[in-house]
Length: 483
Image (cartoon, rainbow, N blue to C red):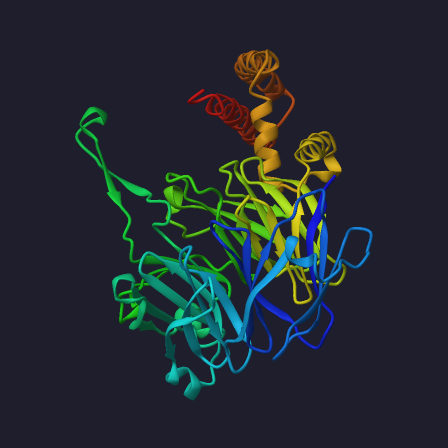
């Protein structure tokens, strides 16, 4: 049975705006609406489930710990389970986003338009940068992403992406590198990912005089190109560009794209998933159309926004998605099916998702952060049940029809059907040869005008029927091509 190992709850006038899990330790960073940031270290398992309740967040942090029976844990014992390593007032206003750059440093941005790079061990600031131009535009940060030496920050308006670089050899000194303006028609930048995160190589075909002379060349994608979602489209752009006229935009999805993630960490996997505002998750594949349009849809929760996505990090073709209905859904990206769901909280938007050092799911909302222990046995059982029940099939109708069509390809029934088509067409041709005789017999009893009228109608009808039969036969043959 799925269970919550750590439940962090806010019971004061404050809210959780962001969180990040350490890549190599059982630690997490939490950013609050007051601009405070804290680092928590935890040591928990299924035998010591803990609830951490913050009663005060400000100059002083006050919290209590409770066990799974809601019994208070004595203050002298709390450090055995959860320890508040450090806390600070990082931003003048709210802390909008915080992420780890590596296992020693992290970066945060606030609604005061300051970016601050700091040591995650003690919170000491290494460098900071103030985006004064955003102050003049009254624009605030919305998302944060880091890749190689780049730190990219997307805004909630104007379609602005700030590209920063940091120098590890120079004590992580921050430097402004570039600014892109007007992405996504000047709307919000909801999420950013690196196009070359998985070191994918684009295959280019050079056509020769015949198939033997065709050449296939692998060309690595640029490490400077990124993917972003916002408004109703997905865009690909180069962080070095000054002019965004070369931005590659997808087809209009007619719904806001809220979240984005790759299916696996495998270096050859370019399957993307986008969460939309009306409860649908779309599938994208670079190798098919270079992300110009979706290639599939998975229905998750009707009229509920999919605000967060993250892969399981296990390369098992599964991802977690956080939805505004208070649930977190586990999706199998290959079969396009919901495997299971866990309840984060009633009336809580699951806008934050992460995976901790031990590959455990962490879900977050404005009031609660939960670290989960997922029952793998129960997960497989739910998957089998969902396959047996048509009511639990959340895959897209087009995919279902495709699978049903493929199921018809196996067995002898399809061969018999093809044979029956051959016989039908043969008998139909024979009938076509014989029919004119019956028309000729009627010449004695009917006028030439009536004869021509009847003959044209019958011939037209028979020609249409023959054409339909032939098309049906062609379709049957086409289904077997390549098998």
